[in-house]
Image (cartoon, rainbow, N blue to C red):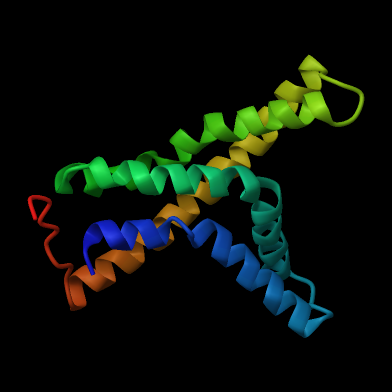
Length: 150
């Protein structure tokens, strides 16, 4: 597998992890309380709240990263949560205009601040998970070189 193919597959992690956690929570039906349950619920909420805009963002990013060099590809994961933040804020703006009582500036700004922190927190958590898996693959079997001239 090339590094490009790995990163394209890894773009699905923020959608797949919440879905898997939701499935596990549904299987155990009555999860025990405690910190594990709280983290699991926040993971499910991350998929619920940001899943739709992230899906569009991931598709566009999957096309865009095909144009990056090998060196640029190694640097792009750290920027992903910051690149997604404006997309998420646009999504919040669209929702605040189309749903409810209409646009309210302070409510919108408060939502951007509060949810934006979670986007960055979970975004960098997913980046850390992806980079951990990438380093394990790199150490164990390596990635095949992507020959863009062919």
